[in-house]
Length: 215
Image 1 (cartoon, rainbow, N blue to C red):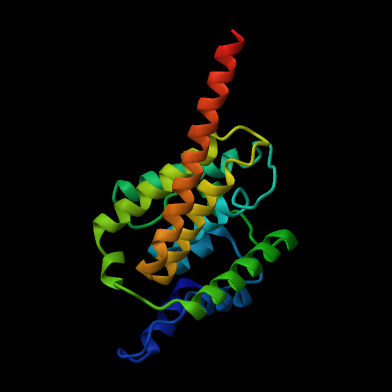
Image 2: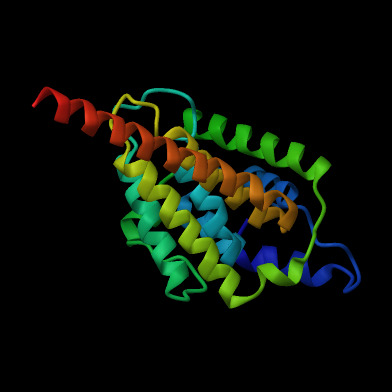
């Protein structure tokens, strides 16, 4: 579905109608696009594409699986995009080569399907709360800062340690909360990220102490 078609759908709605759910918009886009790309996703969702892309980038390291540092590039891209938010950008900027990334492969389709199912489950228990907060410039800066902090914590985690899971999960949760515009669930993401950072600090201190005792 092109941006023009998406805009026509939005204009056809009643001004008093409730906003379409994120899961519905994502489902319509996936069904309408035979070969979806990252650039198309960004064009359709506009500013909310920041949150969706963060979920895509940090979704893999958020899984409790050893990645051996294979996700470092994803985390680095998330850090750069988070800095764009902090700098006040309204739209994602990525090199053209990256925006052409295809999302239609079998593995990527399965991941997008799982993401869609997760968003639908959250929508059942969530409702918009303090939506005005999500439209404020300072909230975008805070969102970018939280994502940058969580992504950096995931990036510096030692390979095969699993310590990148909690910081990455924190980013995913905060990003999903921004998509749903429900302030009540933001705390869950912050708590997960903070727990991950604290665990990294504790284990790093223990490792340094052990190394010092050996020397």
